[in-house]
Image (cartoon, rainbow, N blue to C red):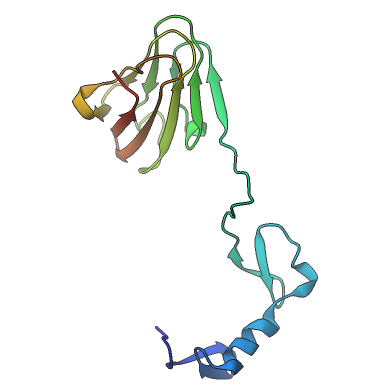
Length: 162
């Protein structure tokens, strides 16, 4: 790994030291000024994407809301979304087994009880849902929680629960 003052090859045949002006000059010359307006990318030289732009404070990444009006079982498309339960009577949000829906480990699904009916998170066959105090029901209207997959059929639930 190159560090300050260590030699590194930046461009074919162009060897310099990190921090020296010839290294910086070589990088600056690679920027493809014809494509600098391409949203989300930093194009270089022949147009090859070097880096995907990180979110900036001026970006507005809205979360996608999946509104449900009856009991519901999570689907793969819910990963990273907010499942909003807008139900007037008691209802369940079921976490399916990995054999039915193979969410990747680390998947997070946000949940909101929007309706007046209590939403209870239930485990599908062979699934374990863990939470502080074994709480699995949303506490009231507008309560929010998150569930995250930590192993094949193991999920952790946390948030405004009762």
